[in-house]
Image 1 (cartoon, rainbow, N blue to C red):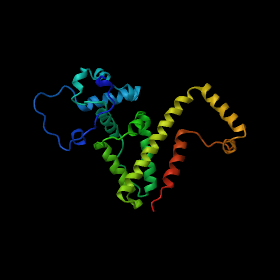
Image 2 (image 1 turned 90 degrees about the vertical axis):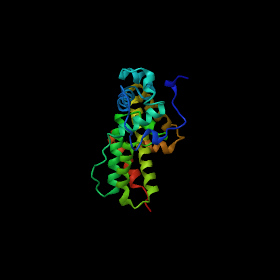
Image 3 (image 1 turned 180 degrees about the vertical axis):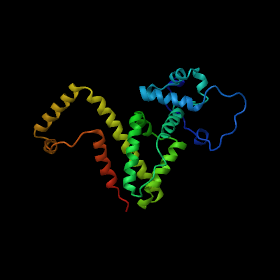
Length: 238
């Protein structure tokens, strides 16, 4: 197996990946930087999807030899950690909080949705265990501060934020897939005919009743807000 096709590694040492202090580099200045390589990988993932990200393609984007990049990112797991934290730097962390933790949590979720729509590969990346980098930790700190008025203990606040992020990631992944499917009118029409037939067969009365009710607005933003309200308003802080 070539190094480009490796998608997993024994594990990333966070203290190696995100050193709390940086020792002055001796010798000749490197030709590239971790940031430049990460930016190239993010641009590639944004346009072609994460599966298309290989060290060979990243090297071509920065004009480097493939082997020269492995000192910055020795495997794809490390590169993915770098990419996730890099784009996390786009998320605002100094926005004033209102003190209404539910409203603030919803605002954070809307930020996450917009962020993931800009980087459609993120939901899948967040579904596996990642090593939180400095940008990710800054946003987590902001979210935990938003939850302070809820009166939850530390572990519960972390669980709520994880639940929120999982909801947003799952919703965005579905939203992106639905958007792609909607570009095929024939497929949409075929699905509508199928559901109509199922509703009329008499074996699914609950579904038939549900489909007989006029649908709610299907605008992506409105749908997300409706689902988010149900989730956050229903959180138990007792």
